[in-house]
Length: 276
Ligand code: NDP
Image (cartoon, rainbow, N blue to C red; front, side, top):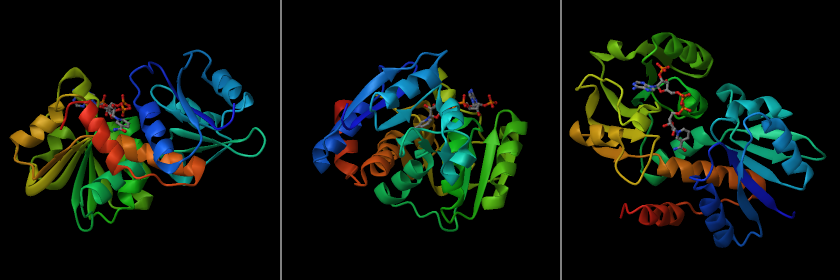
């Protein structure tokens, strides 16, 4: 199985990762195959071991296995360590596996390189304190922002996540009800509310006049939080498709040592989803 890669998750049929990595491989002239693996809910570790024993070179990991992948890795990057979750496994010499998490760098690159957002001196609100929020904490705190506020429906989880990030940068946690007098230059939605066609309950004026909104969720139609951004006058309204492609590009680079161009891949995906 030469140069074989895959994404493992449950469910997995919806995953766009095979399309993205096939486009990267064509563009960079890399000879590789990238498939989908429906992970068994009761035997994730066994399945991963079999994939690598059969010659697999690298795996992406998606819901619900990112924490199990973290536990399985023999060594981990600092950003994966803080994230408590691994979305990329790299085969080292022998049977050892290195775990990394490319979600946060994917988010920051999408904002900075694809859309020109300047984090320096900015006040950023991160909504949610689950796996996605934790996964992006370290790269956000390394971005140069002035302060990061993590707000979550369950306040205690926001405090716990802020305590985890505190050694790395200016971060605090609060409940959604505590945002009344606050204004933010960027609001990032890392909650799963959109999957139930909902948005976290926010004060209507918490976005600064030139503020941007970013929803980690994406879909064929504008997400509920993207609609919220438009309704509240956001200067830019972004969804998570760019983050998806950028996290994949970082994984591709970790595996292949080649950095693909992401812009044409994002554009092609948007076209296939009827966005443009
Ligand atoms: P988790 O289940 O770990 O966490 C869910 C979070 O959402 C919790 O903080 C929860 O709050 C909050 N939440 C859920 N419903 C509501 C609601 N109605 N109002 C307010 N808060 C709510 O999920 P993940 O962190 O793994 O995923 C979050 C989102 O991020 C998903 O939509 C996922 O698709 C997206 N994502 C996108 C990626 C990309 O590449 N674009 C990568 C990774 C994730 P509480 O603690 O109170 O329950």
